[in-house]
Length: 250
Image (tube, rainbow, N blue to C red; front, side, top):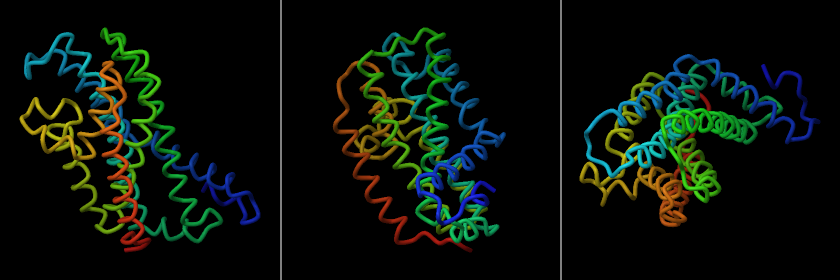
């Protein structure tokens, strides 16, 4: 266990980094997580490029690639974390780690850092795949998209912890996968909300705001201030909800 060799006398930053490495190793060694984090987004990219529906402005990849990157963020920050945390709580791992030198706040910080590190790797790999397929993102968008990704990690890790902290592990598994499918298909992640006639609603959802933030930045539409504000609002609300409701044991 990552925290076994650490004592309360160790600097807090070192304890958090050790926990983050431990959490990241779990994520990258999980076959199901690799499927959701990389394989399915790549398949979604190829399917949307090959399909004539829905009708999108040319080049299609200009809208498809940013949506796939947003989907990848949600895959790791939400789906992977919700399921892992739910089963960790069921089997007493969270309770044990909470009493270790890393502490409860260090545990949550470690999870967030681990997700951020894995997401960086995902975006690089998927961005390379999209570039091979002909994607040419806006240069300014490449500079501001890390802000969108960081906000997305914050919001969807908070949502993952909210589910994992109140539901039983089996329910978390079912709900997390169902929500992933719904957000990918109709939540404004992969494609803008107006392609399914729900733009007035999904743009205010965290999924729609994240998808719009990636698309606005990477297509050169400008700095996505409104999507960022929506994500910040969701992040605050969900974080407060986690603080009030999260249970460390079943």
